[in-house]
Image (cartoon, rainbow, N blue to C red):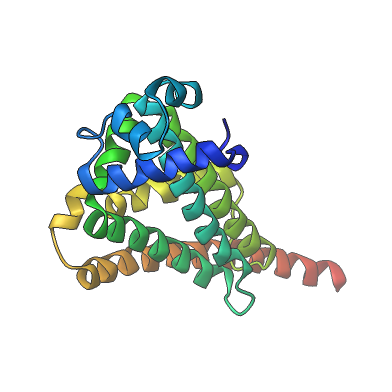
Length: 214
């Protein structure tokens, strides 16, 4: 069932399972333990979730749904330019991943386990995140601070460029501040490229408009 359609019992099951997943880990949690925490039979639990993996999937969907909403809040910042929103988006994405890895390692382990068995969840998450990023690119193009012709393609390139900063491997390399400085450097290069393309495109169009007016 979709996360937004969870009824009271399903929500209680997910809450009980989440506590066990975060404390003991996915591998050490059993369906019978979750059922006991919910004061129900294991058979009744299976009526709501056919497997432990299904509960884990719903846990991740709820968690990542909240993350998408946090990323989407960047779009609502009226005092930030599209370039600033792009930076805010990637820095927030990095912080969410970094904090989850260090503060909730069991949740990170659970996500990794789920995505290895149900990779379509990762694709859905990437697409949801990409839609937010694409909106920022469109804002910048409307404002003529970006000059993006292929929003979907550019979104994918940007997601690939930032992948390093959401990978568990990089979190062992340094502290948050050092990695944030490195990420800011990557964003600087991207924005410099966007500014160059925007100046070339919109500058040329302005020159043509002036020539036509004369």
